[in-house]
Length: 248
Image 1: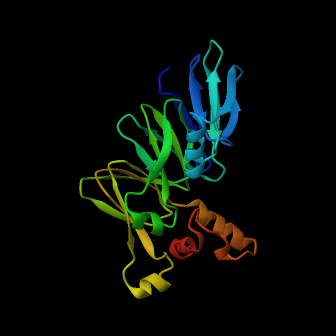
Image 2: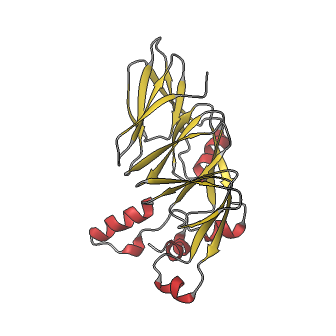
Image 3: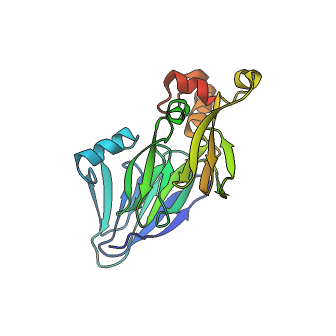
């Protein structure tokens, strides 16, 4: 089976991806992402590679199981997926190189794509990143679809070119991109700036995708509107340290 898939993105601020499968072709998706499918498509759920594969995905923030959709008919058939909060979908071609992304960013992919753990290369980045120590690595010869909150801004960094990004806004980057966490300089900026204590630093070459509305920021505003306390919403994996770092 070819690892490439035919697809179209539907919608604007609440996007979905519609994938067309040839006979016997399959696509995998995170449980809960399914919207609808044509007759002839069969849905099965397993660990996607055994017990260890399921455990690795669970540690990385995804579900223990993964769902596979296979076209069992002789004609082409469609299946559609969407995330659980407003945002855009990135269609990433992994045939060039692997992509690292935040936990919970993975939506679906060609069946041949491998989803694995990717620990940050520096201990400081993992401990101080605010979005957790563990990233997801997506690799293989085909397409993977990543969901990000709000709008997506893509940066193509040249060798040595760098960006400083809010840790929650950095959604994904190519494996060639160097990733680190740095402390915001200046006591006043740290305490009164409202942007947390640290930001992510990415250095090219390679592509970087930035989201305008991280889920943690979106959830915090909803909680505040409902009379809750802002500090009650924590970034994934951050705990108390994540509250301090998040700046939200």
